[in-house]
Length: 79
Image 1 (cartoon, rainbow, N blue to C red):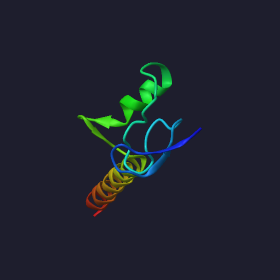
Image 2: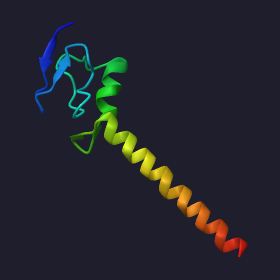
Image 3: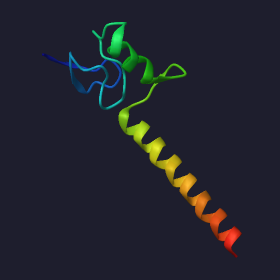
Image 4: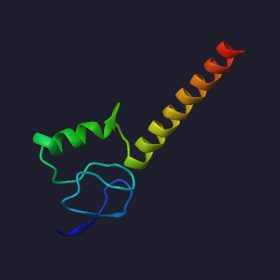
């Protein structure tokens, strides 16, 4: 395992990493099939890379919006 700079952002990543933890850019030597291939596909949306932190932010935001909507609906129906 060696550490190399990310091609997209320049942060240091492992050669074994499926993607950069900073920007989500796929690793250089990830094979095109199997689970690693799915990690590469799941990390891309419409041709742009999405990091784990960005994905977590999207999920938390979505849950917050749905929760707020549920609370508002409950208040409207109760009152």
